[in-house]
Length: 285
Image 1 (tube, rainbow, N blue to C red):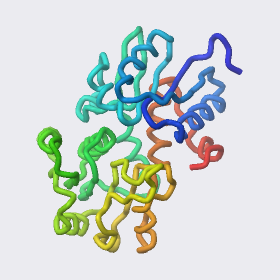
Image 2 (tube, rainbow, N blue to C red; image 1 turned 90 degrees about the horizontal axis):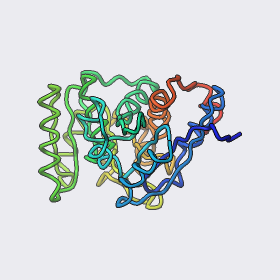
Image 3 (tube, rainbow, N blue to C red; image 1 turned 45 degrees about the vertical axis):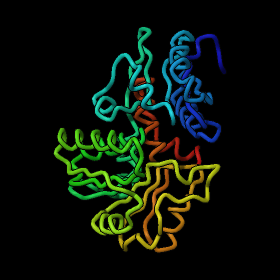
Image 4 (tube, one colour; image 1 turned 120 degrees about the horizontal axis):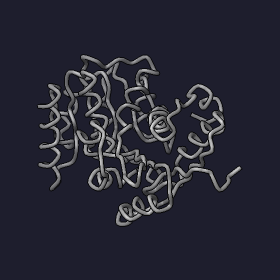
């Protein structure tokens, strides 16, 4: 029952209608008997900052941020966790004393999703597609968790130099070897994947409604033995994951990352550990 004392949690960004976050958080709150309700608001980029400030006025306990708002919140938050500051990306905001306290649980959630599948990438090289907010969080956490090297592929664009500067800073601060490379260069991709334990698509290419798109130019570039992961969870199996599965490769979709980043966010919001195993049983993940 929603009462006058119920605390508000939510997701902002666009699109949000497909999100499983409300189901995950509301299930966890019910299991623990906590008086919280979690909903989703589809907010365009130009209104993200106003929406965040409005949630202070509404007395919300906190909120999650999806594309395209993660870097916006990093810019306007009153304080940032170490991971959020290093990645310049915020996906979780706790509202405390009228202040926006920004955190990043994307990276920790992603690493936990690999661990849940028995994959350890400490000391290994990985390849990441994309340099957006979620990609930055994953790269930062992987570097902090002692991945040896990360090749990051993106399109040539005016934002190339900014991405290069960011990755150089993360490399310098963590000691991880990180390079930004042109995704149009097939030879570079082939070489990188041949040396990597995991390929991670951290772009939105292949996400609904454009489900027929694939971020990798050619699935023939995938070598035997590589693990292929995708942070997209709608659809559950992207074109990239389907092509990898058809080659007999191990694949990991975006739902495990969503669950584990939600668990970290839930702890920040409520102070309670999410009962992950029980939530799994009740939410289709």
